[in-house]
Length: 114
Length: 118
Image (tube, rainbow over all chains, first blue to last red; front, side, top):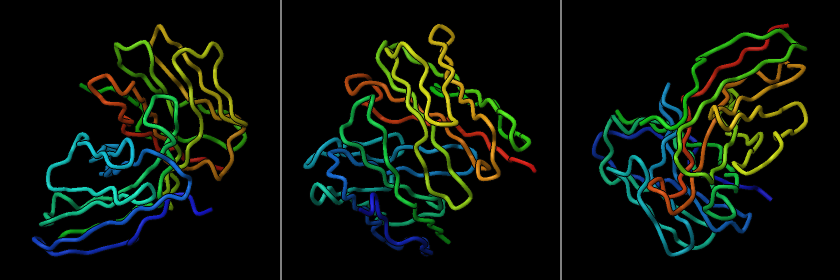
C-alpha cells in the first residue's frame, strides 16, 4: 500500500518546455488534488477532481491543465513552462471532497524552470 | 481574503516542553473542518489531527491536541512533551463545504517553523 505516489521527484525545465507530472493513489479515494507550495505562502490549490470524470479549477489554475485518467490517476500538465512555475508540487487524495475527510499527500515534485 | 492565519513564522522549544501553535480562521459557514499537517525537512505532508466544526470535544491524537475555540475562530495545535523529531513546518488548514464559494478546497495557512532544541 504505497498511498499517493508522484513522479518525477525532481525536474528542471527551460522556459517554454512542456511536461506532465504524474500522480497515482491506491487508497480507492474518489477525490484528488494538485497543489503548489511556494516559500512563505503555504499550499495553494491548482486543480482538483471531486470524482472520476470531473475536474475543476482551484485558486491558481493558469498555465496548467489536468487529466483524471481513471480513479487512481490524476496528472498535471504544464504546456509552456515559465519561471513563475518554479515550485514544489504536491498531489493529494481524499475519500470524498467534503469538509471532514483528511487529504493524504504524495512526496512532492520539485520543479525548477530556468 | 485570507482564510487561515498563522501569526508565528517560527519558534524554538526545548525538548520535553509543550508548545502551542496558533491558528485563526475566517468562515461564515457553520459547517467546516480544521486540519493540522506537519512538513518535515524531507518535504512530505503528514496529517496530524482533525477538528470538525460540530465536534463537541477538542480533538486529540497522541501528543497532539487541538484547542478549538469556536467563538474566537481559533484552532491552536498543542504538542506536548516535544521531541527532536517534532522539528518541522506545521500548517493549519480549513475546508468549507462543497456548496460554498471555496468549493470544498483545503485552504492552508503560511505555516509555523518549529525547532526543538535539546
